[in-house]
Length: 454
Image (cartoon, rainbow, N blue to C red; front, side):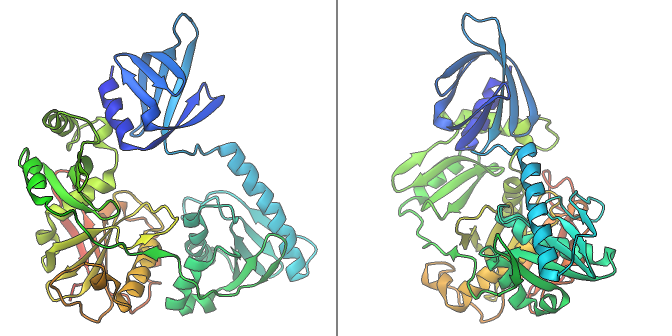
């Protein structure tokens, strides 16, 4: 039974949602979940594990039984503190579709919606979060204000992909108060401001779109690695120098030591911690055995972006020869209050030009525009001197030029709509696309390179 593997997986996520027979759901911190032999403790519940099945790399289903009971329970563990409910999601989106439909009829002065669509059009890359309507002579696409930020911002992509499929002008309805990222994009892509008619929904009625000057909130933390950490970091990395990699943990003011993207130790001024436990030599050996190219183990498929990031950093001199490898920082700046599913690296060329690297291991239709969001944030902080002032790129002189945006993903997982969206990016955004091999876990090979670093 793979309980040891489950122990490692539980240590990677701070919070888990636990489904008990699909009827009761608990959000538990990983500290309240423990495994001992074949028994699992979940908060106040304790069960004997009978069978364990991996549904996905980070989702596990357990058949278990309480002490002195014959009834078998089905326990499913999901990473994170929210369990998406397909039924509730559909119900909410249908309710919003009806509300926005009535509001559009009132705004355009028509009696009824001629046609409405709420389904995922995978062929053309348009998700089911965007109800589409034909109202008089207008084609309207909208998004519910209760959707996550990434979904709301994705309406721009959905509209661009939907527009060629219809023969009338496209209207985009954006939730009032959730338009900061879209407004920031429109400021650097004014042609899209003219391409579509933009409206706003305030929960009761539709009105003209009022472009905000507020930017999505981002923060550049001081780069303050722990003093005198070098000796301890060197000691740990020397245990397996071909496997371990030291990466700045900027938010934690620490150094993270990782094995193929998974943290096995963290060195800070408070001391050294081992997230996966000790002895560290045994953890390294066990993790190396299962997290490797060709393995079918769940840990070989978990946190793949982190693994790709690790490989890219290790091979940066070959992938991007003009990069100054002394200065590579993850997640700078950070978006306040938003979850991002793309790995960001900020670095610099040998000539002093900033470089933003966006990494994605799987197909993601939002990659080009989410990368643009990060580039906009970097440019905003660059122009006011935040990076130098907060300790980044020590000893370097930053050139007063726009940062270069580099997209890195396996060539075959670049989403089929990526080319269409990349063509919409502003001309003043220096762009490089790098397509790598699907077998990057073994070694990165460049299959396509568009653009140059200068």
